[in-house]
Image 1 (cartoon, rainbow, N blue to C red):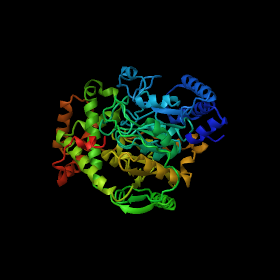
Image 2: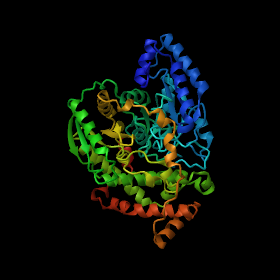
Image 3: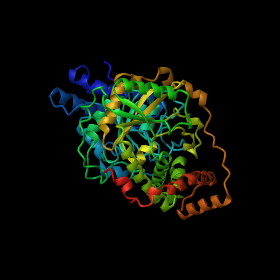
Image 4: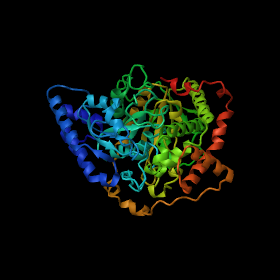
Length: 546
């Protein structure tokens, strides 16, 4: 019985062709076979998962049907609280008492109430930002299409677990692309809902005004099934929206007649682009046209400025959250995470305020754009997943090129990555479908229509890839990159800022933080050159959508 998607498994359960116990056993068997290499799970819940599956079977047999997720095995990113085990955020720093007091995060509780079977906690990058540090006692997640490469982050384990059958769907979080990047790199579908559409309480924060929790699964239809359960206000999250939740499934007809889809090419033209990407995008747009959509060219407004605003916001808010722990526990953080948070400590208060103003101006510009189209297409990434051994541990994000997810976090609109094919080396690519605030229904409608006519989302990694045969090609350990020349005054300024914060980087980390500070300054200065920004209320940058 082929049950590679949630939709297929739900139908098979109700026909009596399969049981939840059998689905769960198959998921656990896949983990037994491949997780030692891929590092998908931080914790497995075999015993409680099989107990939940048996209850689901008994309930369904008795005519108690909790909906299409009833009896479906799911994974949960280990940045979310669950009753089975405390969340770690894959860090030595997070206090286990935090998640023990919460129990289940609201979104996890909703999935559990819908009958889902939680099979385990999936790996993440530390606090959803720091690239996995091999010196820390946590698994290194790997890409199932080529385990020498990253699955993308920070929802790495969920991204790698779906295409290998370790669960049929799972939860990720997205602050700058952490659902959509691993979805694109691993050949699955991942949705960042509108900011505030899904309650994010019970999730260890990265950046309060950017964070979101999203579904990851093989198909847009599966993401719709999950979002229907996850969405809606919760009193524990003041950011969550009270707007009614749409009927996401009713629009999944395969027909896109009447939809006007804008395609942005300006944002990625001239950047890092794999040779396969343009043809893959052209083919995907042709399919959307065949489904009835009208495809037109658009230019995303303030693209570079809004990406910078997202970077400033995420770095500043995350540094503020971690500042109480950084002085005394600097060595307990992984090297990538502490270098990132150290970079956030170099930002000024005026930079943060200006970024929020830019976000608000960007939201207004997006509203004008969506007056002329219903959806926008742009890349999730124009480059495939990068090789882990090529990553400089002190500068982990220097390897990440061609990413185009941050823009949509900055404005808060819904955005979904769907697979559209493979590079010449056999690595997946994904395109983003983005829509108006709270119009996830149209985003899902377009993704589902595309997947009705394609099967990229159903492809599976080969056994040869899953054997780790390619690891030997990239066996060398990461080598720290060359230091960039820095003015003595600039390095001294950064050293002073970090000393004021009582952070304790070594000299290599200090230089990496100073390099990042130096490289970001021109982009940050450009935020002050937008005339419309000056009189914007910065508080509305993130709250206008709620």
